[in-house]
Length: 209
Ligand code: PA5
Ligand code: NI
Image (cartoon, rainbow, N blue to C red; front, side):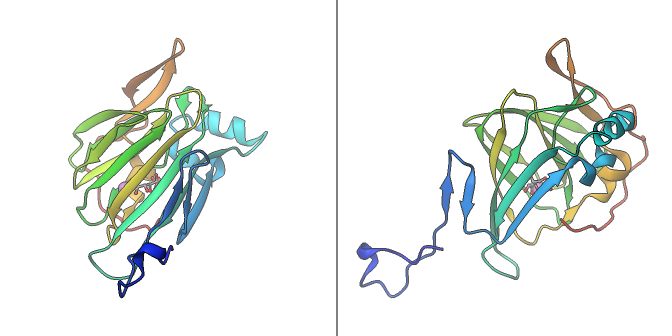
């Protein structure tokens, strides 16, 4: 982190800052970096045959994220940047796995580039979505599961901010999926019912990021 510059001389302590490269979608410094390939998320796409077909040839990178968490303990905010590559598995667009926060904490997504859909779903099964375009800020209310889907031709990049001690629950999504998925139909994105979605109330299951 940046310790400060000349202008800060005379102050006893400079507040740390991070730097974000908007062209290369790089954040510095980071405390966590993750590249997610198709083989890491095979259960998350609705069309399992399509997943296996792709994996028999190659294992594409679906998305990656870089994150900074300033410290341990309650009260901190984490910031990160996610980049989802363009592409589809079967008819379903590349996307993040999606999760619920273990604590009922909210999150902001600020879209830097690309075109996307933010899928939202409450624990009781209500659904909502928001469009992501460069300059959009989307709010994820406490208690809502969330997944970003890249429906554009290029990369979808967004900055996110959330409470560092939120925790991530992937179990419910892995097991049941989202009620709606985003697929390509006649060259355009369409929100459709997820054929794999089981209509029973999701249970909480802890699973770390
Ligand atoms: O906390 C968030 O919502 C983001 O940081 C996501 O974790 C990130 O986009 C990766 O998605 P996921 O955690 O669903 O794999
Ligand atoms: Ni989140």
